[in-house]
Image 1 (cartoon, rainbow, N blue to C red):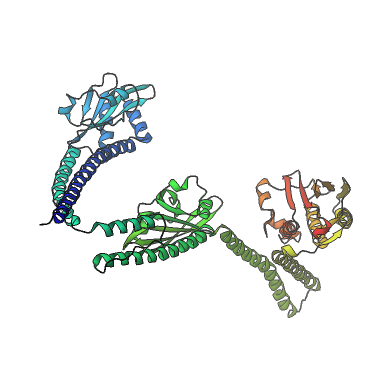
Image 2 (tube, rainbow, N blue to C red; image 1 turned 30 degrees about the vertical axis):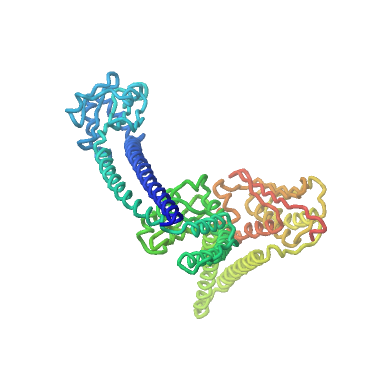
Length: 601
């Protein structure tokens, strides 16, 4: 054998030994670390579970119940009965027992295992409970788990409820894990030797090249390629690696592009989107969802916590076990949110839930308003139509009779005429509301003297006021600037408000109309000392067809739309109209309108 061959053999042997030794050391280290970590985690897990269980069982309500029980004459028996009712939840068995201790001495008065009560030692948690604090400190090194809580009125505690677990179950689990670890260690050592020998026989150089290429890819450089120096399997692997790098680069670019598109779409959606994993934790939430839910730190909440108020009641388990798509609604004080739920899959299993939140508050309000409006219109039209039909049929029958009464005939015709006028007014008001609804931004813009307009309306209404034996007074407070708006509409508002004041103010009543300028606004106040409006009716005054006194309103020819029309006209001008009233003392209506500049026309 040549010297070069001997050196090569020695080199191969050295590499082989090193690789095998490295695999053996690595296997031992990994299994030891994993085993140690698993044992520690299991121990910690059982301690945390025990502590959490005790805290959940001994909540404020149960502690208050126990405190009340401890003050009774047969406190021990009642405490035993109350605690026995929760023994299943606490996991009381032959290894986990509970005791009732004297808070002053720490001695056991009663125990679920009488034999162990005699040898019960004073632990740090019992000492904490004797100091009237909850003893829930857990020590992994201790051979037991315990929990102690003082019972009784604050400052006068008399007993300690003490739960102690001997950790027999944990020790059994740990022993089984140790057996598995040692079996895994033996198998791992065997595999390490085999794979170390096989690996030492491969060519190191191509692996180094592939390593360099992988490092380049890790740093984001996909342009670097490896020279293919052989046509064997290593050469094919090298060429495949080069092709993979190119394809990976293109795929990552496409994925990033699609990811950016999806994120942008979801971020700017009007509807809220929340994605949950299979455990109910949030993995994605867009700004719209945060805005709709109005809940602080929503990212830390679980599925069931977020949707606990859904109607019908819906939980994560219901969705995961139910149909693919489900719907629900969350109703709050001032909003209504519709929920759409769908499951999604990852690697042929359920990956989680996607919830889509849609604010339907305005839609529901419009639907309710539309239904109410149709019902009110039908009701308002049905009454005069019924009257007209009834009187007309009576007249038809009366014509055939010989004792035809001309006065009755004239009276019936007047009723029909009045009801027709009432329908005409109602239809006219409905047309005005329709025009305002569809052309609020298209109201006529003209410049006119608002003070002069108010004065003319007051002069016209003074005739009606005198007929009702009332005094209508116009008092301009300050000079009014030129106003820009729809003169006819503003006049209609003033006529509506002043007419209402005249209708609902008795004889010898006084009505004051005041105008003035305040900052960048002008105002008109109509104040009377009439019958006033009940407090509970004021928020509804501007609703369509709403009447405070329905019988009197119809008698006076009202349609229930005047204030609604006035409100829409003032709102279309960018102003506000408010009503202040004291029942039995009078009413004040305040109209505030912004002053527009000439260039805004």
